[in-house]
Image (cartoon, rainbow, N blue to C red; front, side):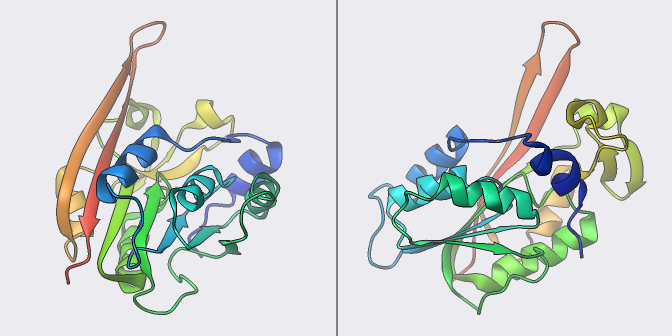
Length: 226
């Protein structure tokens, strides 16, 4: 089991991080990959770490015939069911660990990870990406956002193992924070070595008011080879 239960006990059960709208990067990237919306071949999408379902609703409205959200937090999935109750019924929610996705091989045209895989250690991230590779169709896309080692949160985090820390103590108000990996570019290329890279952008936002900080992410678009 790789799921950090702090997401259940310290975040979702406490009604924190309740996102109602899709992330702008998710919207722009899906539009970039599927510029003509969904065709007869591209009809299934998976989100790992779906949280309260904000991105799932967008994927359904975008035109995917089947949308599957996985999360390890029961409270998050309860919130997602409430958020998605008026959707068309093409969205499935599953409580599962990412290292064992409950799906057959070659099912999905799109696998979305908006900052969820990165909350695992390096070895688990590798296993999770192997699972994503397995469930993607040949030619299917992985869209992933992972924390960069240039993120300022590393400076106050407690080191555990390679790239892996207890981090975001003050942001989450959890004593030891949440388990988080911060990757350099070599890590990213190693983790996704099976995939064909289409884009790998290091995106940084700097807070200049109050205490300076840098939020830095790897925004990756990759493809399972045909």
